[in-house]
Length: 418
Picture (cartoon, one colour):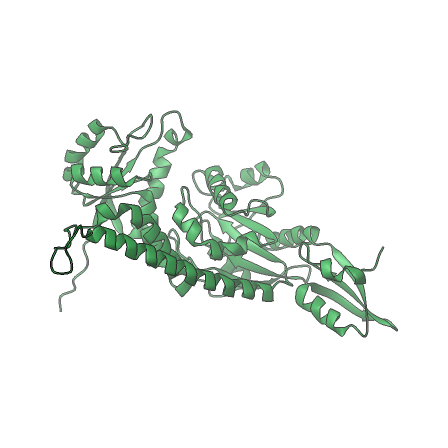
């Protein structure tokens, strides 16, 4: 038997930071991240370079002289693929492929490709396919190779149409179908959330590979998939945890974010990210051993603002303290944050206590008196709030309960006035 392995792409990486921007000082870090993206996508990196640009050239993004210089460099490295750390327009992509004679991918396309290989659930596959089609639509000319016009004939005479136009219409129809399917999935997910609405919830958010899945595994003890690669998991997971104060909280793990996360993905994953927006607290997990934790925090907050979750209270949790000498300094710079290590367990108890304190501060305890003939109200309180205690008086049930923001409204008439 002959084991035939698919050829490994040999990728050459190119950065193009703007002159005068902070990206100049971080170009090596950004190309290191692109290296990890390339590795996750299954490519071998054979070289890298960058050019500082005043403003992107509409023709090549880079200057024409730099593009000419690249030809012998790419040939010498044996590159089969060029990866840009920027987003390229369809025209720039076409021109670069023509002049370099190699396939060219921008950062967005690389991330979309990784998401496509990582998608496991039906919902994630739909979301990734939608994002890929929306990215593909304006780039069909570059990616499409059979551009011959449909030949005329009996019943086919006249101006005809290109196969390209046919494909565009097919893609638009497919996009419309996927959006409708995802609406149905979103409704189903919303119904699931309504069923859990009585419990306070916290969402784990953070830069990809910050250790969110490792943290969820350490906190819950469940067998959660963990891998030291970017975007190891795409599907949200929910676990019920007991806090030190005796309360229960639902903790949701979400897809990791990244610098310049493609807009198509943010749009496509709206239903998945809805759980972030509707959480009572965001536990923002930060890799304290990363070269630029502050930059990663800013990148995550940018995406949170894009999905409308920037108003949800945030708790910074600096992970990987066991391998990060600066973790304590990061905590000192961010009052109210916590330091922990998901791999050793250090700081996990403090994290849970802090989550409990934050949630209690957000949802004060309310005392209610419900007459015995209103058993329906008592049942609704158990469904929609967290009942902490229940006592029986001669003519009513006395309950102490905690509600999520706005959840007390319909029970206001039963609240005991202090």
